[in-house]
Length: 80
Image (cartoon, rainbow, N blue to C red; front, side, top):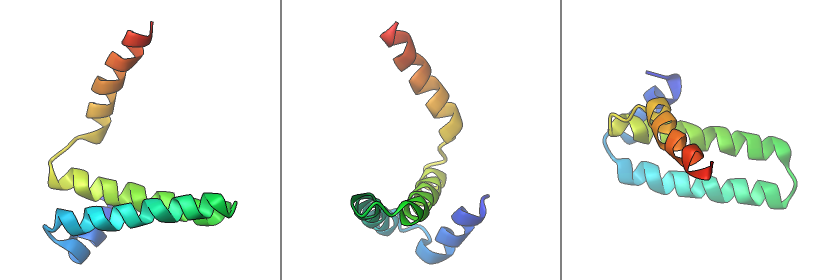
C-alpha cells in the first residue's frame, strides 16, 4: 500500500464518494494553476489527484498498471 493510499484511507475510510468529490476539486486546482501559469502549484495538484486516483483504485481492487496496459494496447492497435 502506498503512503498516499494509507493517508486517504485514514481521511476517507470507505467513503469513495467523498474522495471523488475531493478529486474533482483537485482537478479544478490544476486548471487554476495552469491558467495562472503556476507550474509548481500544478505539479502539486497533479500529484494529489494521482494519489486520490490510487486511493479510489484500491477501493475497487483495480490493478491500474495492468488495466492501462490492456486498454491502451488495444487503443494503439486500433490506430495502426
